[in-house]
Length: 391
Image 1: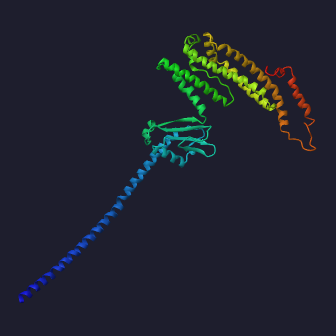
Image 2 (image 1 turned 90 degrees about the vertical axis):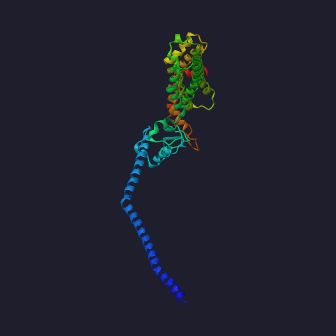
């Protein structure tokens, strides 16, 4: 029993002897963990105190470099904008953002810059809905890629357009496309003849329509007619046919101008002021046509067709003579009718008389009006005494 007690007592004392060491070990583990946390914290503080300023400076430098690069790319765009009235001060932060968006967004294909009469400089991703009278600068992305300074030349097609598209188209065709086609010798002859014939038809109508908007009649003169002497050109049947098409259009244009007078004569609502306006416009138009008929280009085409005895020459020559006579008539009529403008404007401004109001012009102005009306009976105002239709 004693041995049993001794064994229990030994196990008990042995167990007690082991507990203090385990406690010390646990305490030491806690101490090591706390020390490790303190060291980690010290390392963090060291990094923050020594390396972070360097990293911050590096990040700031990168931001500054990116801003500088963006500014250079924007300036590249701005240098390509050649619009009257646009200066460095015209560009705002909003405009810069639009330029950055166009450069970075590969899905945006077009950028336009123009001056709006109401809001000033505009930078948009589409053409304005309303017609712009002044110029429009445009940028077209050639491929769906981000635009950077290194690929600007290959990725961006830029230029300027006037707001009036028809005028711009005519200018580009006559100034760039027609010379390239006319002077080129690389085309097969049959293709070039066919294409040139259609080009002349299009340009005669485009020229006529474009200047009609301004109340003018302008004759289209084909460039290729001036490249050869009449004797040489008259032997080229294809060229002769193209010149005949041009002359047919000239004849139609001149007939329309001549028939415009008959429209006025048969009208019932035209008064003196309307007739003065008509003759002023007609005088300018006929004088312009007369000057065009004297141009070397028109004479050259006429000489080519005369040498090959074209059937369209007699009618054109007759109209040419008629235009000269009509121009003299218009100048004469405008000279005498202009004397009536002031009294007609005065009478047009009179209000309907009320009760007791004086009727008719004032007595002191009536003799002046009669003197001006008597001008029409002057022998030199011959066109006013001609029967209707013979003027």
